[in-house]
Length: 199
Image 1: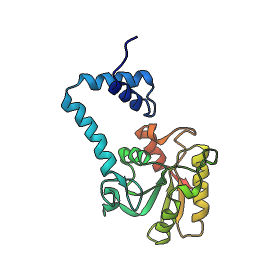
Image 2: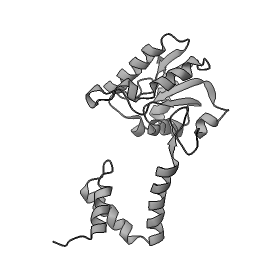
Image 3: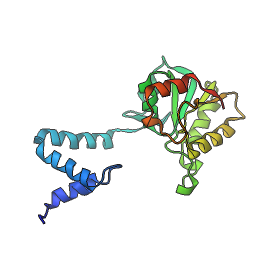
Image 4: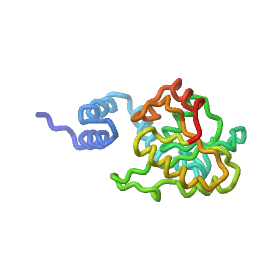
């Protein structure tokens, strides 16, 4: 059996740590990076470095941003009275790509999952309550994933918001239970936003 060089072995080991990437796929990716020209391979490495050094969470909504505030929060044309709560930045991106929501977002950076040791205090729920307390928000859309944990998180947040003068709605169930927003097509997302109901 041919021994791989230390550098190639390390590259494969690092690539196989990525979600959904097994050993064989990591090997294919490593060999691809060895085959492409040096400029392209180094541009890939530089893109990873730039993301790690420049991307942070928006200080308002916790979306990904390259400055203190993300472009969505900076956009004064968006509906400032409607707030859509999602679990992760990728869920926000899915809704934005569907092009059916023009309000603001709040990213929880997870969901309540007691079996995994994730409680409300590890999410961005306190800053969310602060945003609602300011009074500009009139509707809060619960767009957590339709899973047991997502529904539990939405219920917890809706209970915390029950003392405030906001309408709480939930995405319509055009999205099947157990599915993930990231993998839901645009038409289903559009129906879910359009047909949202009071929570």
